[in-house]
Length: 84
Length: 291
Image 1 (cartoon, rainbow over the protein chains, first blue to last red):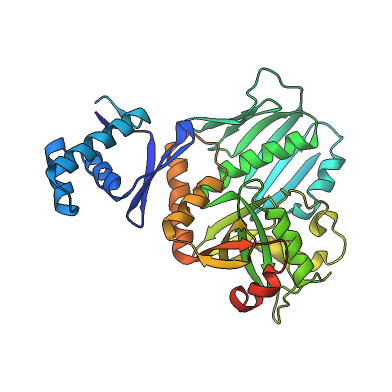
Image 2: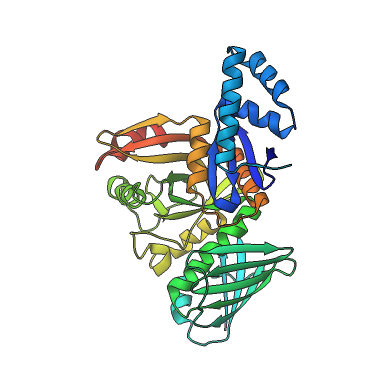
């Protein structure tokens, strides 16, 4: 899975704002979501993303994995990811 | 018959085949412009059908189509020329203009935003909010509480008298290191604004066409108490994004808009304006916003 191509985004005060122009939808991510999003854009794999989460946030590996999977599920449900 | 009108220093020319455009001339008289055009349109009056109810913009290479139930325009971006087929009603032409201008401004470091705007003391203010937020209410209160003068001065010494630029849809552009707001032909509840009728003070109001520097952005919040609170950057950004008019499905249009918004919010202070039915300008404005 990768981030859908036709999305515009910008980081404001550490939070990502994503505009899905086709659907006229605005999505606002929190800090954790923004970090995962930026890593997905760089094409990073699950293991490296979770490692970056552990470096940046005071969470256990179990929590980081759970957050990562939940976030990906949310991105899929909002149609912000597509098959590579 | 040719109608030349300019918004935010962008002159557009409309070539009408029909002769009955007098209402239109009156509607946009303040915005008439003798100079060179940036875009031109051949206009035909038709009764369109089988078109979408909501405005849709489609872009294929340099050809852009603007379609709604009552208008259909094909615009060639390389030549800056278009053919507009529109219902022979003022509202339909006005709606096309709103959709086209929203698209055009986003490509040119600007946008149309759901906001009232005004000039007070020679400085520009935006009052941002969607339908029902109180744009017309705040505009009327401004005139009621700060007074109204027939011939407002735009050159020093400024007066406190406000000039409302619009109570509905404001035009904002980034021009070099300035953020400017401009008179808008798109109004809400406040009917018959001075610069539409052209009654009194027209020469002084001409200066407005060059735009006025934006000094502050307010996000409108109806409240029992009057107060002004600072608005965090990300909240301001989100609120602005939600209130800007953008019908384009183009990713790069969204990117342009997002860049313009972050530039503006880096340079211009934004606040939340909680206002009750009376006294916001008397109680708070003189002390805080109009120094």
